[in-house]
Length: 117
Length: 155
Image (tube, rainbow over all chains, first blue to last red; front, side, top):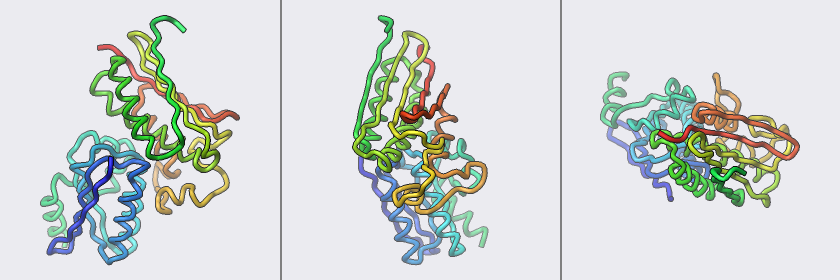
């Protein structure tokens, strides 16, 4: 199964990355390339929408952590939208719920971002 | 082997694209063996992690050797999956002592995790397996590493 990765940037400068499919050892490089590409283009505030992700393994987690490290080097942020229990479970097992801001919706993430400004 | 033992053996080339196929096959056999639906996601993820680790290890050391899986359902008790690689004497995090261009750095974009799981993606994968499988035994010998995972069957 192919991984679909698309992005758009909102008026308030938040870049939303829609990910659809399975993120594993085979497909994770595509997401990694997208994150690197966005950072290279000066997009430092990223929100990864995981609502259509059907599978995520530790390779995918590694890519997200790698992206977080890159944006933080530019005082940026990388947060997630995820309500799927099967995906949230792997973040909890690995303790990464404390590393990533995880939101219920894109709107919630935007509101949270506004309140922190 | 006892008559009520059902075993499926799977061997695949050490290529990342085959890991998904392995996940699908193992999940199908687990379902057929009576593993509860609520546990199938855990089986899928744990086996995927074990296969990913084995594929990465083979790609670094013996890309022509296949990764081996053995699935066994023993009647109404346990469903067991054994993932075996043929990379001798690796550390438990799946990363060899000598670094290589296709090793840890290439896998996670040069990023290592800090904190309680700071040990690279191999360690993260094993942590996930330990968190998901009902029982796990990891053994590393001169022949390679073997990850033995099992879950209960029957309702």
